[in-house]
Structures are given as structure tokens and as C-alpha cells.
Length: 356
Image (tube, rainbow, N blue to C red; front, side, top):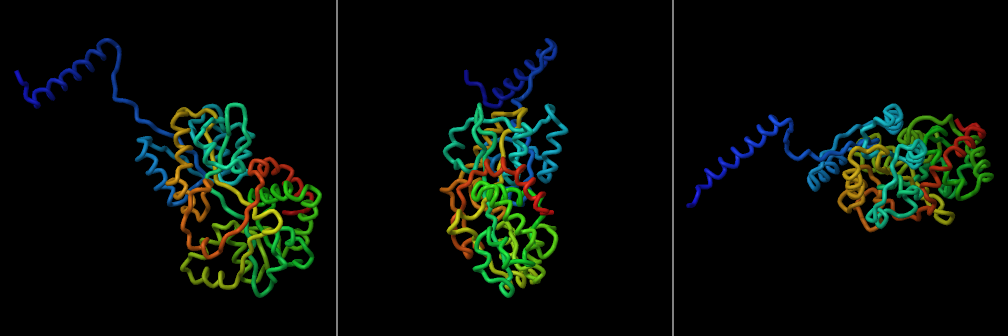
């Protein structure tokens, strides 16, 4: 006898209901399959990251619960939570901060053939027993910006030349305690050696137009106004102003030039945005899945375009009008892991040089 479809559906509902009731009576409970989720602690806060997270959830069904703060805020939260932390993945900006998190044992090393194949060796932490603590997923370059009416481009073509007497009274930078400065100095220590970098730091202090202060955008504006002659900035700050339609930004850009430093002497210093799996991740499988997703072509495009950066995966190309107008350049080969490890020595060196 053929049973109507409607009756079959009703029978199935009745069976499920009976099983549920029997489970309660016997002391057992039955529920639907748990929702897959991931707890993300992120120092990234760019608008296009929303599309990044939505794309991951759409592809995997894994819900992302986010805690967002600046890098120091994320690190302090992890410290206060200790072993009770519910973080699965930690995303931070700058090699110095990633190294600090590693030294604080906030990461759990992972093994991933996919990440090993996609992320270059110089853009990750050194290998530990059990795998790699963290990986870089996007890069930014530390460029030189100068006032065209005050400074000759030939006088500022390398990081080292900024400390030459010809630039006395022209230099402005961020604080010597800022991770961007510490990472650059960490790179110079690897490239030029400790003694040469100490001499460089003293020369920079002697050439200051003002005490170090403000962010990268403040440095650009100070150079454009003539308060300073030359400064150091991350490329995404400069690209933002190049793409801006604000009159103040357009006017500032018209007054300044830029240099890709050290094209014949080691290449441009690069830094990263990166992350890894948290030490006590409650969802380790989902954490690795998310980190591997960040190395996919689509995620690399989101990460790079979201903040005017470059993909860490060299095979991925992005179309950025500002970058295209600035042209190509040679980058340094120094490992970001080595740069991170040098930050303590770099800070001591800057303090001794009087770099505030």
C-alpha cells in the first residue's frame, strides 16, 4: 500500500517527538548538531574585513565571534584571561607585536602543509616543536616621504642617509617606542649590524626637526607643511591620501615626493599583519581552517585591498591604482621573525641614543 507523502512527514515528526520525550524521561537530552563557531581576537578593524569574515562563514558554515581592539588591548586581554581565554585565533599588526605574543606564549604552534606552501619563509615565525606559531598574511612597506621644495631626493634615498648631516633639522618620525620604529631598527640591526645602527640612531636624533610624536598621517602632513623635510611612513597611509578626494589631502600630496629606499642596498623594509592559533583554543580545528582560509586567493585579496597592502602569497595579484602609480620596488629579504626578536635590543639602542 502506498502511503501519502503528507502522512510520512507526520509519522517522522511523531517519531522524533517520541524519541525526545523518552530521552528526557531517561535522563538524556537530544539536540541538533552544535553550531560551528570560532572566537577571533583581532587588532584589524578595516571595513573590508566584514566581507572577509562573511565569505568564510558562507564557505564553511562556521560562525565568527569577534573581539576587536588595538594590538595592546588584545595582548592585555589575553594576559588577563590567562588559561581561561576563549580565543581561537589571534590577529595582530606588526612583527614586533606578533613576537611579543609569541614570547608571552599566547600562540599554539600548528602544522599545516597548505600554509607552509602558501606563506613565504621570511613572512612567518621560526618553526617550533609542533609547528609554526604565527604567519604573516599581508605586507606593508616602510617608505620615505619628503618635501620637494626643501629636500633633494638624492639626499634621502636610503634609510641610512636620513642620519647624514645634510638632513640636520629636517627629520620627523613617530616615537622611538612605537612598534613600527622598533621593527625598522630591528631590520637595520640584521642588515647593517649593531654598531652601525647605533650610529644611525644617534644621527637621526641629531637631525630631528621636532621631538618624535604623532602617527604616520601626522608625519606626512608635517612634511607637506614644511615643519619637517623628510619622514618615514607605512605605504597604506600614503596610499590612502593619494586616493583621497579631500582638498587638504590633495594639496598635501602635491607638495611631497616619495622614495622606495635602499634599492641598491638591501631593499625596502617590509612589515606584516599576521596571526596564529591561540594557546588554549576551544575550537582548534576551526582555528586552523580559518588560518588556512586567510591564505586563500580570495581572502588574500580582501586582506590586501582592505588596507592598501600587498598579499603575503606571492602568486596573488591585486589591482590598486595608488600602488600602480608608485611603481615596483625591491623588498628586503630579512625574516620578520628576526625583526621581531631584535625589538628588545632595538628599544635599548634607541633609548641610549636619546630617541624619544
